Image (tube, rainbow, N blue to C red):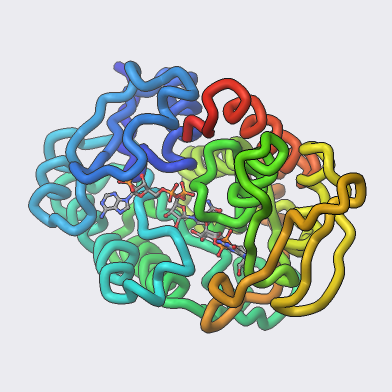
Length: 345
Ligand code: NDP
Ligand code: GDR
C-alpha cells in the first residue's frame, strides 16, 4: 500500500515542491487547505500536480478539524508547513501569528499523540529563531534570540516538537531552514519582489521597485533542494533537528545586482539610507528606490547557516547557487509577464 503523507500549507511554495517530491516517490498525498485560501491551487497547477493531490479542509486554528483529520487519515508522515510565514506581518498580527505558528503546533502534536502515535512529524522551523545571532555561522547548537513575533512563535513550535519527542517518544523532527526561494515564492518576500519587479520594469509595466533594508544578509537556497532535506529527516530511524542552509550569505543589494543582470540591467548605486537609488547604467533610469515603509521594527542583520550535520547524517547538500536561483526566478517572471501580462503565481 502506498505510504500516506499529510502536508499542511500545501498551497504555499514549499507545500507544492514537497507534494511533487512525495508524489514522484509514490506517496498518496493529502494536502491541507483552508477555506479562505489565499493562493489556491496555482502552485500545484504550475507543477502539474493539482489533480494528483487529495485536498482536505484544514485550518491550524481548529483543534477538532485537526483531530478528525489525523484520526481518519492516520498518515505515515505529517509535514507541518502551514504558517503565517511573512515576518513583516507578524508585528501587525502578533496574536494571530502566535496562534497559527505556535499554539497550532501543539494541536497537531496532541492529535498525533492521541490518535496516530506512529505518524512521523516534521515541523517547519526557521533560521529566524537565531535572530540576533550569537555566532557565525549558525548550527543546531547556536543559542536562539528571535527578533520578531514570527521568530518567537516559531521558537515555541520548535521546542514543543522537541518536547513531544522527549516526553512521548514521537518521531518528531524540526527542520531549521534558512531562506529558500524559487519562482513559486510568495510575492511579498524580497527575492520575488525583486524578480517580479524587475520583469515588470523590463516590460514597461512599472517604473521601479521600492525596497527596504538593502544591507540585510541572508543565506539563500533553492526550495526544491530543501524539501528533499525535509523528506530525508523523516526517513531516519531516529528523529532529530537539522539546519538546512547553503553556507553562503549575500546582501539584499547583491541579490538585486545579480537578478538585474538576467533582466538586462546593470545597477549603479547612488546616495545612502532611504535616499539610495539604483540606476540602470544603460538607460540612466532609476529602477530601485528605498522606503522606510519596508524597514522592520527589529531586523535580523546577518544569517549564515552551517548545514554540516545534514551533510553528515542525511547526505544532504544545497546544490543551487544564488546566481542560478536569481536567474531562474527572473526568467520565470519575464516569461510569464510577456505571455500573460502578469506572473501566474
Ligand atoms: P508560504 O507562505 O508560501 O505558505 C504558507 C502556507 O500556510 C500557505 O499554504 C497558507 O495557506 C498556509 N496557512 C496559513 N495560515 C493557515 C491556517 N490558519 N490554516 C491552514 N493553513 C494556513 O510559506 P513557505 O512555503 O515559504 O514556507 C513553508 C513553511 O516553512 C512555513 O511554516 C514557513 O514559516 C517555514 N519556513 C520557510 C522558509 C522559507 O524560506 N520559505 C524558511 C524557514 C521556514 P493560504 O494559501 O491559505 O494562505
Ligand atoms: P525573511 O524574508 O524575513 O528572511 O523571512 P524576506 O524575503 O521577507 O526578507 C529578507 C530580508 O530582506 C529585507 N528587505 C525586504 N523584505 C521584504 N519582504 N520586502 C522588501 O521590500 C524588503 N527590502 C529589504 C528584509 O528586511 C529582510 O532582512 C523568510 C520567510 O520565508 C520566513 O517564513 C522564513 O522563516 C525565513 O525566510 C527564513
